[in-house]
View (spheres, helix red, strand yellow):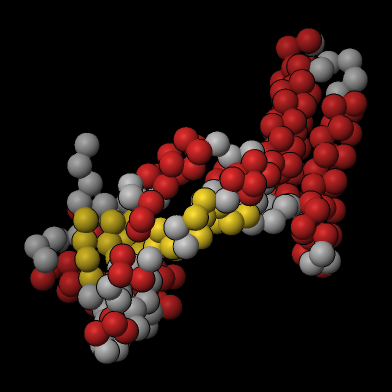
Length: 225
């Protein structure tokens, strides 16, 4: 009986955690601000407690719901009231501009010089003279604007207007044909089979991944163990 209770509370914990995570929304770890980060850890910790709470599983469940609701409410407040973002999420802080480091802003952001140098190197800037402006974002990441003569060359610099490119669409995945994607592109399995033969394949199962661009160019990839 006790094992059955553990199984049920574990299932309740997994389902509750899944639902709350879906309600809160998807964010990458690098995009989380401090409150979102600690809220996620806390909800996960409570979920682990819920999985083994046999006497009163509703107590940690209520706590999970409260944390989840509070996180959603804060998200709604910041989306509807722009001024609240400054106090809830924080504001970007200029760390460097025009060759000058702002020590006061670094102290305000609790960012040490060695940490700043590390973040610059991670962004690909080993020479601070290549940086025009560095901004410490509220999510803990560093945004860097390079000086004009160190910026990557783009088509506008050469007065070139390239044709727009679009995301390629998967038409074969794990050796299986994705009929829905083919139809959305105005193609069919007859066209696909002909393209497979042109590239030396007899059937879709021989291909691990197949993607097609807006020019109907099919790219095939084999899977290797």
